[in-house]
Length: 76
Image (cartoon, rainbow, N blue to C red; front, side, top):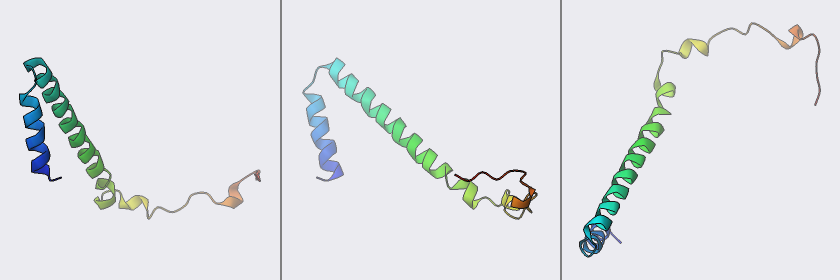
């Protein structure tokens, strides 16, 4: 079913409902819209650190300690 067909079917169903029920559907649609917007925002934020070069110096940082610095070695 196409997006427009879904919209048309939903509008038809809403028009048959009393005002308070139609308002509930409107509130739910707003909630879903905001939730989807937050999802897109958080998904986009995951790519920011990877694309940002400001913290690249952390990858080039020299290791301060090695395995030889351990006083005790625990084997699992």
